[in-house]
Length: 102
Image 1: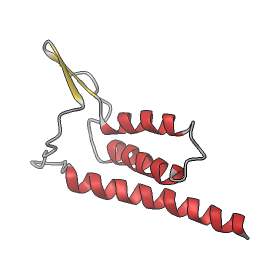
Image 2 (image 1 turned 90 degrees about the horizontal axis):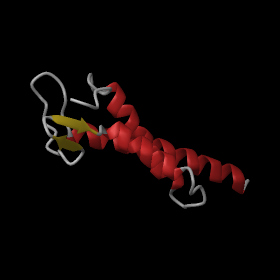
Image 3 (image 1 turned 60 degrees about the horizontal axis):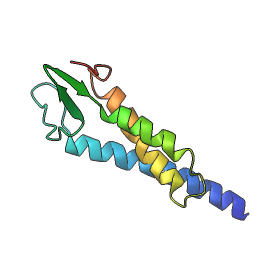
C-alpha cells in the first residue's frame, strides 16, 4: 500500500513541476507578435558579431540529464517536472527554438 502511495506522490510531483514550470515561463517571458519581452539575456553569449543563444529548453535538457544521476533525492520528480516543463515550453511556444547561432 505504501508503494502505491509513493508512486502517486512521485507522479503528482512530476505533473506539478511541469505545470509550475510552464506557468512561470508564460508569465516571465511573453513571446509572440509584438510581445517579445524576455528581459533575461544571461543565456546569450556574444562572440564578435555572433550570438550563441542557449535557449531555456537546452539549459533544462542539460539539467534534466544531471538529475538522472540523483534518483534518491527527495524532490527528484519535482525537479524533473520543472525541467520537463521548461523543455516543453521552450520547444512548443517559440518559433525559433532551434536557432542557437545567430
